[in-house]
Image 1 (spheres, one colour):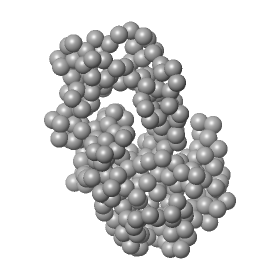
Image 2 (cartoon, helix red, strand yellow):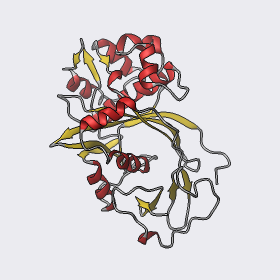
Image 3 (cartoon, helix red, strand yellow):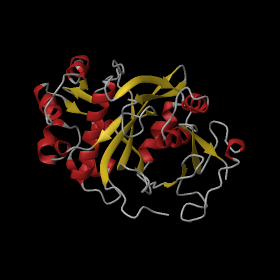
Image 4 (spheres, helix red, strand yellow):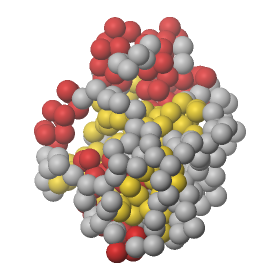
Length: 299
């Protein structure tokens, strides 16, 4: 089942911030403002829409640490041009600064010492559209595209009112910085191991968005940072993940592309879903929204 006139896709980018603490991998999650019209009140990774100012490879080349060829080699693929992937990459870094106060950049080849000042600056009201490009140039910063890793490519279901074509990057948290939510688009931030986040989602304490839930489940097999770094070095974008949304009287259901009913018009029976909720960390192909909490469901 598809929408007759699906909403247009907008390019977006997300960064999965990870770190190793006490021999355990953790991820950073932000709670979107309850007023947000998309995923309001849910915990997500920092990210947002790709803006026109994020494109323009010639103007950005002096302020990034990869050449055009290296951008295509390290971050491209999936028929993306260098300018396309640059736009996604710049947006991911900009949005992570705007929402989480983390700057993925260096000054004179060293991790930036000015990140706190720049993070405070991003909170100013009524900044112009090109503020990020101007600020990076003024501060003589070099955006660390080399630290970005490809993780996944998500496309919002056709029946949703807002739809995004989103690249999920993954980055290890820069040393010497701390995450500080903007308290505008985001209300709270927290570091958690993936399994703990999934458990707290089922307890309704940390309500996760569907792509966040799926991504955290993917990350469960990595116990140490060196394992994840090896994965990032060898990872491509892979096939786009385009779930299907199935409305029901008992709450919407999202079917992942690997679900047996993903390309079927078969009606989803949710009458027994309370008994089909899977434990945190289980592999799944469908997610059910039960009173605002997305829960993995067995087929």
